[in-house]
Length: 313
Image 1 (cartoon, rainbow, N blue to C red):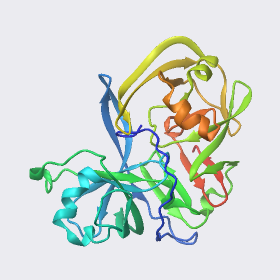
Image 2: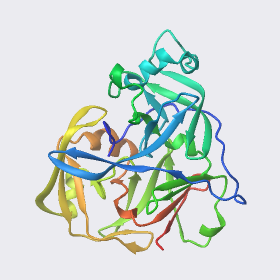
Image 3: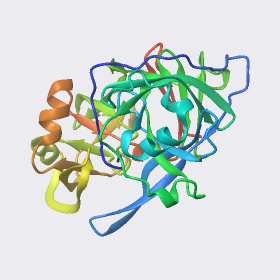
Image 4: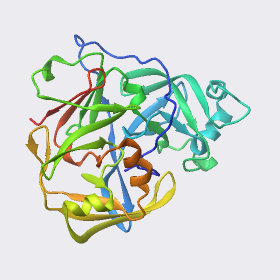
């Protein structure tokens, strides 16, 4: 689940150059951390995936959400604006100083773990939480934006959920070459996985920004595979600040992926059908899946060859 959004779609992909490591080199692991949140009066321990980030030479600790359900890597205007005023070197990288709408920071250095990325980062205007002036230089990391799939284009992304880290490589690391691979589709960088649900092949979006959701679909499709009793609900400004309410039902039909039957789960839908109209129908998919099914695994996302592998050991 995203801090203010579960899923966003943009028509333009950000560009940039990315320093990665070849197959012969050891993987350079980048740590991430689980961020908890209280939603609808319930504390969700693994609500969001945050990555500690340093930006250029700014002496500030930031975090960005690791979100494969969002197309472009971006900074949020509201939290970053005071730093632009204080650090002209970053402000000067904006493509246009006349407006903070639809602009790009050119060649920003994102330092994550021990890895440096030189990347073009979008600015999302009028978004994010304001940072009080007296907190700009406090020791608490400031949440500043989103890391998206445009950073991994034509690369291999390895996510080690068990150790809370990820890595990027030019090619498939040797230790994963014997794993069974599942072919996936890409739509503007969004991964579409083939699941088998109640005996039928279905397409699901893979979204690391939808952490609590094993499955989400339309109300109609959710109730076709689940008990009619509502067992969970989540409400809040969870879709780019827009209020949205989700209901959860216990799945009572088979769910399979990559030839493996997955465990019991809850399927969610939003009561107003916003995801159905804004996400599922445009992508022509059954629904989405998040991190839940893979929390004890290492997953390998080969964006170049469109192959998904799972290491369950």
